[in-house]
Image 1 (cartoon, rainbow, N blue to C red):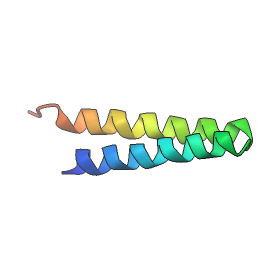
Image 2: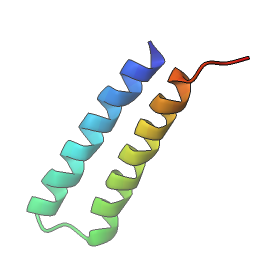
Image 3: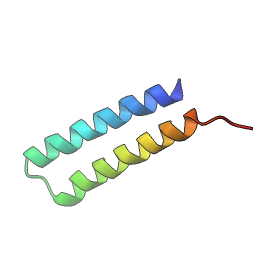
Length: 52
């Protein structure tokens, strides 16, 4: 369940990064949204791994 929520959050963050890039916002804003999106996808992947 949490992995689905995190993937949705990653999609919203990628959309924000694209929107900020099109609006010519500072590069650090676009990169921070992209990094947060990647972190959300990695967390979603790690939650799908089998535990002990």
